Image 1 (cartoon, rainbow, N blue to C red):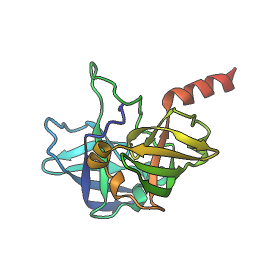
Image 2 (cartoon, one colour):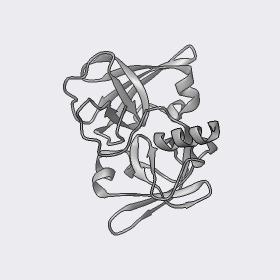
Image 3 (cartoon, rainbow, N blue to C red):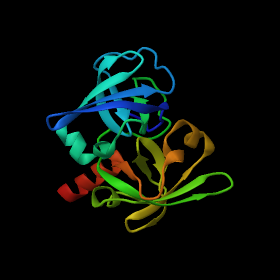
Image 4 (tube, rainbow, N blue to C red):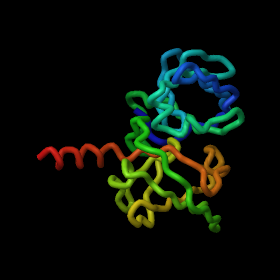
Length: 195
């Protein structure tokens, strides 16, 4: 379980194809203390398991994760967002994030305002059906608020702090992003459909 509050960005130093999967090696911008083998870490919102640690962190990536996320587009030098799983007793500053990417969306416009970066995104069906105005959505692992929702397009506003510690400030129109719909919305919709 994550919160969508990214700890730092990290650079991909290697991505090795292994059969249908891959091995991902990243170097966080800031050293992460007390990372343990087997720990869950969200990389651009995709929950992966640490298999090797040191100055870099290494993860095995399943074929399913490659199919369902933008990991298939990663190259050496790509910047990704990183968040370690929350611990019991941690404050929940974002929203409940599972690290299970629901689909890959696309950035359709970026506008710099006086106090924020306004990004318009197009969501796939697996995400758009759960979006509500002022609801939560996870974009590349970042907990954000849905604004200006029209069908499958919506806006998010990125404050300078978020732009500084995440990779969103480097994104361009046409870039792909991992999206996870709000978990509570998915459960409510599932319960209503069941009844």
